Image: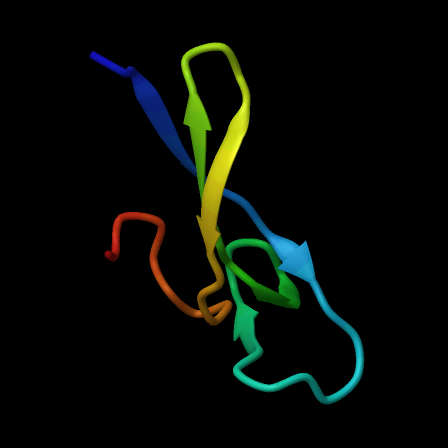
Length: 58
């Protein structure tokens, strides 16, 4: 059985990238991706989401 961890993070952006949004919590224009890691800390996958998406969404 593989153990994984799902984390969200803020990726600030500058300019006119597609699907960016202002996030009041981080006080920046950003993306708010979900990151998937193995128990050993190895990166497995990511889903890029707009900055206004709540951490618990999707």
